Image (tube, rainbow over the protein chains, first blue to last red):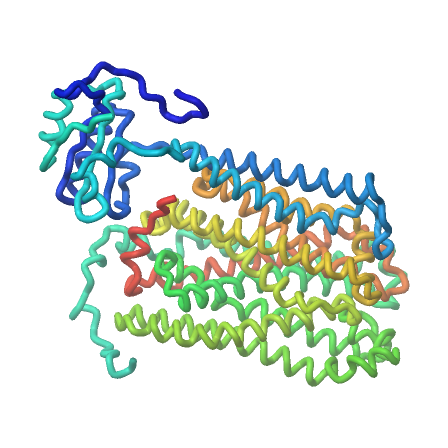
Length: 194
Length: 445
């Protein structure tokens, strides 16, 4: 793993005929059913570094890909607890310690007025940690992605479905993997350069 | 709409989903033999509990010499009202939930809609309890010694005060109060029978347009239901405990409580039916997951409502409002803190993990706790005020077993009758047009 969990680019030894580093292979499928069943087979073959791209969400693709549940809720819970703690400490210190002021004859350390701010800060920190955590888990932001170089890949935002297996995967075996994807019903398989 | 409605016989256009094995006869009908012992035992325990509470209130230590102020009668009437309002909340919440789903065009819940309809249809039982309570109040208030009155606005020691007569006398004129109660009861029973009638008619005719008819009637019905339920809670919960106390949030507070108890009670009831081999494949972890989300939502909603109401009253310091909370905080501090922690904080945290919302052990444990806490909520509202205007309110703290027998008795009786009613009709209306959606229901997140 690279800095801050961003994916590094280890040299796995696979080269294109022109000598460039191979990012992976990209297989194109004609419809959602084909890509769904291909995904099940890729999952069962034990691949880890791969992904499915489609123009729209496919119901059940998570199971077909064997995706694990995200760790994001734990990150958000950490953000919420931090926000609540910060809010309570801040308000206690301000109203009861640093600058005690009688308001409507209430106790300096009355908890009642603290609740709205505590709630808001809990929500705010949760939202921040949700956004930042989501970006970090996805390896974002990044300047570019090798897949964006492929003309064929652009059609996943229109009418094509694509599976990409990265060359960095332990199970990746070059032309054997290409043959495997062709056997799953891919209409086209192409090499993606890093 | 009516011109399209053809009322064709089922066989002419029987949809393909009717062949789903989950909709087979024995899966969606509760034979009387399956729950015969259970409902009879529950009803018997309920009646015995109520009798024990009535007798117990009068034989509590110290009660015999205090009989002159009607303390025992006030005690047992207040306790039975707590139990009645708890089960009333379940019936009203079920009715609200059906109507909200109808207006929203929801489909996932139709496999549990019939059970909700049965709970809603049973609203007459707690409504009858409230009417009986109101009658005993009027009798007590008009008797010679005028003792045994629970409602603060009927209490002879209070209504002679000038403030009451000048400010609230008209609103609490007995005939006006009775008319409001009659309106509320008629609305509840009328709406529940309307919902039930449409569902049963759809079941026999297969007319899918009746679902639209339900949506239309739910749209205006929700407004009427909201008014009826809010004013009922003003009269028989808010003003009952202290006629000077008022909170514009009270109707919402009571509404939040009704749905707060509906989702856990429904989760427990459905889990019980599944344990009897019913609704297999119809009520799945996915449906329970959504019920649990509603449970979670109404834990938060109740917390939000209850805190906001308390916070504004705490800050503004209007004497007739703050005394209501001050009395409970000062005289019943343990119960007040228990409500904050047990009704909000603990279940909130318990419902965070996904597994708690999807497994019967997880949501079942929380659901049982939530039902209990809803009763504690009503107990906290009503119970402290029962002794307020009496000469000898001391004996009340000794009668916890009377409280448990009375409240538990009403809840057992209601549950027993509900189980008996469930054997009288199929557990699912198979002709619901959104049935395929409910059969395939799934949470993708």
